[in-house]
Image 1 (spheres, rainbow, N blue to C red):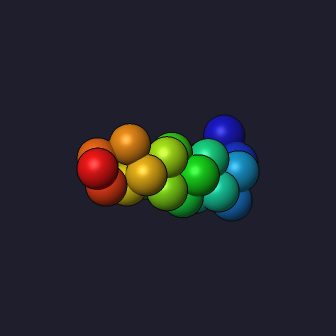
Image 2 (image 1 turned 120 degrees about the horizontal axis):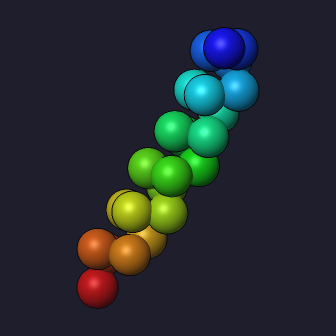
Length: 23
């Protein structure tokens, strides 16, 4: 596994969640 890509995807996912719960 390549952790750099996993970290990047996690950052994108976290940003998505923060936008989703912003309300």
